Image (cartoon, rainbow, N blue to C red; front, side):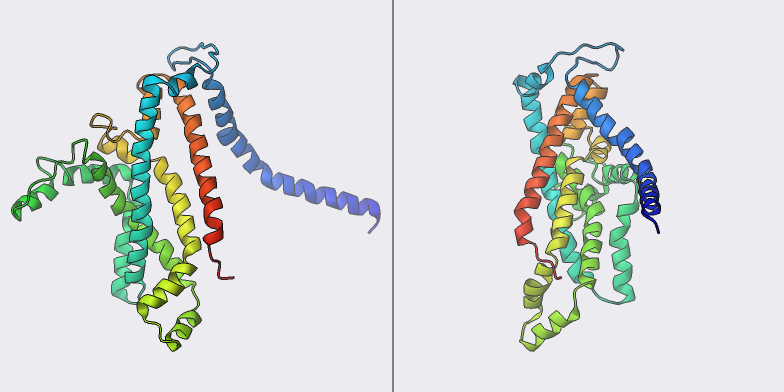
Length: 301
């Protein structure tokens, strides 16, 4: 093959590679990067969603966000969001690991149990939320009915103290099976030779789990931590259906607050500013988590 043919061949290969990635580039440009740039632009305007016209106001929206009522609302929504995120991470990781350890057995019974626990993951959040609103209802909910039958006081979930707990009960029902299946998949990949060697050394079941299973599951734990953190920080649908951010803002997570600013108060400019700050917090926390944990993660290979 001559030099000219080699050059033409390489050009054709590069063109093929470019055409292969072009649809993805167009998709990300239109539906990811352009909206981010547009969001950045809107945050410096006074657009109220109703009017077609707007003008640039500089840092006015960010000044509102970090002063007075705007800052108080930001702190409140972030506090509630982090509380919710903390408990969803605990449920997904601790609950999923516990169920994975219990259900890591080969039998038809345990196979059926795994399917039952994982099934809520495929049920629509809105439908699940409506069912749980009925179960946890203060007056005629089935949970308080059962508590009354056995002589216990009813639990008032529609209060500032318990509203977030009601949402977390739904969250537990939905996510614990997901954590279980991820851990089960990782456990299946652990070589039996480790456990056989530990048995020969006299290690009991707890010691094998503590010193073999847990370290080898650390990459899976990191994966669940990061993905659950990002997903739970963006929680919206269950809050919207079950509590609408109430009562008195007790469940007003930051995404729901952004929604209210944009589509209830029609302050898209302020919503854009909050979204940018939230994006920075989310990316910064995720990057810090990855950096902090990379030294403590054990990869079998």
